[in-house]
Each structure stands twice: as C-alpha cells, then as structure tokens.
Length: 484
Image 1 (cartoon, helix red, strand yellow):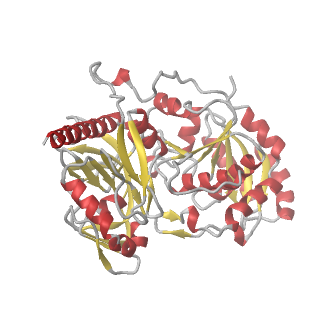
Image 2: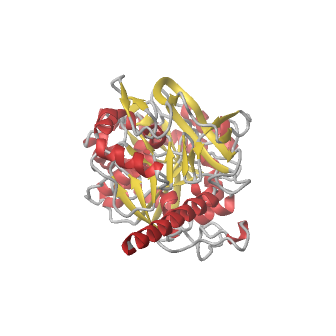
Image 3: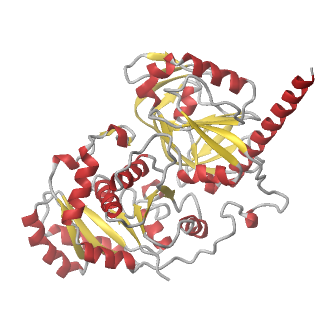
C-alpha cells in the first residue's frame, strides 16, 4: 500500500533544507494538495515554519493560539514501532513531508546513526531528497553525493536539489550529477536575498519575526524551479511502513501494568502560547487531549489573568528574554500564577517557562527583570550553548513521577540560572555526562529539560491524575462553601 512521502535532508546544517521545505509545503498547499508536515528531531522553530508555510499556501492567517500542525519524530526518543505508529496517526492520503536535521547521517552525539535523518527515513521507508549548497562547487558535487550514496545501505537517496546556484550553472551540473550518481536532479534555488532566513542563538527566527516576503519567495521559487513530475513520481513511490495501529496510540497497554489506564474525565489545562512561549511538541498536546485534558490557550503577554476554572498549567519554552520587560510589567498575570502554583495547581514549566517562574530574568536589553518568584534563582545569558543535546531524565526520588520512570528529552538554551533545581538526575547518552536539574514537588515539574511525552506516557498520566485530584478538591471545597 502506498503512502506518498519524502524526507528532505542535507549534507549538513546551513544547506538550505528549511528554505526548500518551507517553499515546498507552501507550494503543495497552494496547489490544493493535502499535506502533512513533520520535523526530524527535537526542534520547535522549523515546525512553526511548516505551519506558516501551510497557512500561506492556503492564504490563511496563523495565530499564536492555534495548535501546531507539524509534528516531531525522532528515533532516539521512540523505538521503530512507536515512531511508525506516531507517523501513521495521520491519514495515508496526501503527501507526508519530513524535514531532516543537521547532516543526513548525524544522530545522537553527532556520531551515532540513531536519531539521524537517515535513521528516521529508514524506519519510515521514505525516499530522500538532498538539498546541497552548491555555492563555489562544480564537479566536486558529484563526488560529494557519491560519498553520501556509499553510506546509503538502504538505497533511499533518490534526488538532489542544488541551492545557491544560477540557472546556467544548474543546467551544466545536472547532467553531470545524473550520469555520475544516477540521482535525479529536481531543481535549484538561486542566490536570492529574499530566501535568506536570519537567525539567533537558538536557530532561525520565529516565523512571525521574518520578513513577510520570505515564505512567499520560497513558495514562488519552488513552484518555478522544482521538477514537479519527477518529484511526485519519487514521493508517490513511498510504501506505507509496517506499523500496527492500536485503538488509542497513547494507551500503550503493552508497556504498562494492566491496572493503569487513562482517566478520560475532562480537566481544563491552561497552556501558555504566544510570541514569548511557543515551544511545545504537537504530539505532547495531542497526548494531553487524548488523556482527558481540554486545552485552554492564553497569553502571558496579553492577558491580565489566568483563564477561569482551570485544573492545571503548562508553561512551555520560547523566547521570554525578548519580552522580559513586558512580562515583568504584567503584574496581574504574575500574581495569578504565583498564587496558583503556591496553592498547588498542577504545573509543568519547561525551559523558558521555568525561567518565568524564577525570581529574575535578564532580558535581551541586558537588564534584570522581576518574574513570578515562586522558584529561587536568577537567569542570564551565558553567550554560549549550555548543556546542549539529548538527555535522559529521572527523579532521584519519586515525587511527580512513578518510581523508575525515565523520560527522554533534550536541552537547548543559552541561558543558565543560579538555581537549576536538584530533584532529577539528567544524563547525556553516549558520553554519560550527568548533572542535577529540575524542581519537583507533588504538583510541580519545573526545569530546563524538554520532555517528549510519546517517549514517556507516565509523564502524561501523572500530570493528568494530579489535575483530576485538584479538580475534585476544588469541587469539594465549592460544595462545602455552598453549605455554609
């Protein structure tokens, strides 16, 4: 059975795969095709590009309060069967476009195949198109591609797109590359300042910060320069991977004791989502909903108070340092969250959300700004990546999670705090380097690590069960008050 799809990968970062993927998604959407977008690895920015591209193709506006539509898949986070099951949650119709990460073969610690774009393409049976920066190269491109083919033991690489080259040079290089490698040359991206995406320390700028012409230019370029007939032929040849679907992909009843089941009763979870806090995996939100949470989106920047009648709070990562002064001046929201966390509202705060709960945060203006203050610590920019990469996280003693639970996630931040917490032990794969992190209580999980929920369903179960208990306690309190 066919399931049209493709992996967009590259020899290394900076080759142009995000620009090409953005243009491809927008162009496919504009053609009226059904499109499903995915990102390989723990990345938040690229999926937002995907969302903006799909909206641009449909001439729709994308607001911060909308759920992400692009999903992250990662063979370090989940085994092959779980990865395939997550991929197959979307229908078979349409085109499934996966953007790779770093270089094609770069996985865990940069040296392992696990977690790489190639490993994900292998697990899903996806053909690969390589986007290659051709600037300053000629015949050497054929040698480069031949080297990549040598490592391609599953024969997945099918085509190439040349970036940063002229039409004249492309027309000379394409026949050479095809004769030397057998790969299909599918088009090129010209040298064009409109296609340059500016960046900051965590990667590319968020889509809302880009010049409006960027996505439009990427779409128009791909529309004009891609060999659509050959592209569709390659993508349509992809086979549906073997992956047995369960009635509820998040049930995972084979992986846990039979007496543990999700409680489907609804609870209301307030989810911070705005320009300052937007880093959240689509599948994390999907799992929370399937476990019984009604997601209530709100803004820490624009709203004066927390939503009413909530049973939990999720503060994800983002760029709070860019809005530190505005966040600090929103005294009503600071007070509401301070009171809610102290009163036992179940709360998860990751990275930027964790910094928001601390005493002070250094803004991009270099000044320290008061934050919520329910946690100790002052956070400031270190000018370099701090504890970057994949991580395995476990509580030193069971508090928020069941005993023995190991969560897989990652850290990626330039900020550090004077108080990072010590409730958990965080360990890097391969190297084994470890450190203490995270503040946990019976109702709070707050720290730098981002947890990928499909790799740790126990995290969802614990969070939901705490929200249920909180909801019941509030109902009992209201009942007592009504009888007074």
